[in-house]
Every structure is written in structure tokens, then in C-alpha cells.
Length: 172
Image (cartoon, rainbow, N blue to C red):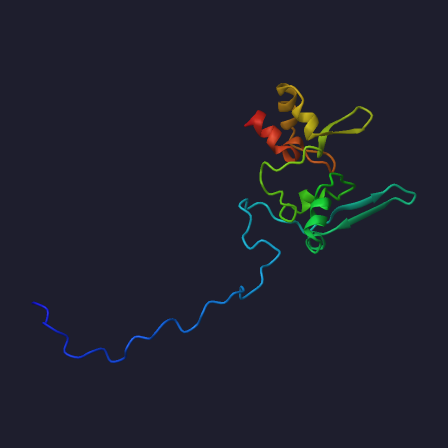
């Protein structure tokens, strides 16, 4: 079987000239403010709970909570400022613990060195809190002790939750 020497008929329709539509100068849809891809940490999701936005000592004591939806309506500058807050009251946690996606706190090594974690409860019932900065300056034996605490009896998280980078260095 050998090919025929020449085609018997030319193509029916000739090819078109250059492309018919020229490229646009602007994107067809404007960019969004929110990220379009999900975080790499699949367990990292914003909660439907409220976080502590504002606390005023009384009388009367005033505790104001907000949601992640409320936070996402703010400017990037406001979100950063609000997410840096490291206080909790009653059942209202810090913004970055309630809204880790909105606060860009999903990285397992994300930590604010000024954030406070539960250290211990004194005999008189006083809850002691310390910062990640404090933890980093402790001897390895103490770091391991505090990074090994698995539960906090009140709204401040454990060292392992709040200071994951420091704890990872000593506990692996």
C-alpha cells in the first residue's frame, strides 16, 4: 500500500486569516478580595463562634464579641490589627483562634510571640498566663513541660496551640 501521488481534490474551504478577536486589555472579571484557593491545612477553618473584640472593665463590665463574617467585611489593615489581639474573656477566644483563615493563622508554625498561653493554676485559684516570648527564653526542660500540657481550663490555649513554633523546636 503506497500513498497516492497527489490529492485528487483541493480543500473545500480555505483557512481563515488571522484570529478574529483581538485580546482584551482588561481582565474580564475583577479580582476578588478573598483567596480563591483553600488553605493547605484542611483542618484550618473559620468558626461560626464569636471572638472577643472588645472588653471594658465595669461597672458595668462590657464584653463584645464578633464573628468571622464581620471580620471579613473589614479592610486588610483592620483585619491585621484585630487579629493581633491576644486576649480572651468568658467563652470568647482570640480572633486568630476563632478565625484562623481570615487572620492568616493556618500555618502550623504561625505564632505571635506576644500571645499568651495557659501556664498553670496557683493554689489560690489564680490562672497564670505567659507569652511565647517568655516560653522561648526558658530552659529546654521547662519548655518541654509547658509544651506538653494538653488542656487549658479556661479560654487561653495551651503553649502547644499558641506557640507551635517554640514547642516544635523542643518536642518535635
